[in-house]
Amino acid sequence: MALTSSLTSGQRAQRKLLVTAAAWGTPDQTTGERPNKQILGARTEDSSIEFNPDINTTTDIRGNTYTDVEKTEPQQTLDPSYILGGSGLHDYLTEAVLKNDIDAYNQRFDIYVITVWLVNGTPVTTSGSEDGKFYTVKHKNCSIFPTSIGGSTYVSMPLEVHFSNDIVEGTVDKIADDFEFSKASA
Image (cartoon, rainbow, N blue to C red; front, side):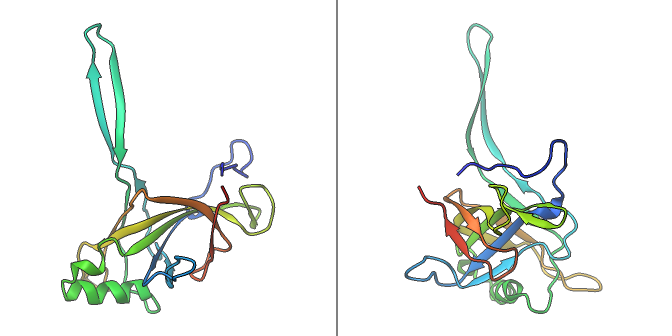
């Protein structure tokens, strides 16, 4: 599945159009989808996916320099990440971090990176149609680590999201916590 941008020439994609979502819980036996889902980033002002490439640069005997990317280790930091009512993810992680239950966040999540290009407020898919299908890559068996918990006025639990690179391409039907992921056909 190739991504086709619906942005007009020179139009910049707004940051809110790149969405990260997490899913956790025991995967469904039939679909493999996890039952609990949440879009990340509420009240977080700035967050980027860092690819963290492992780069190998060598210079041969003729003086030519070659750079190879061996692998990437994508991660995203959400700081602040305030504890908000109705956030099942924060409830799950708070219990895990306070009990020091490291197994509760090691490779227990599927992470979805959803591209949403909006034109005049109308959802437009990667194919340019208005059927509400948004190009998505799903990273299976990822980890989300709380880095601390506390704050001054409100409680925050900054998070590090570590992507697995075990990727499945597909689409989601909407930008909401109850989205449905459909795997791309081969």
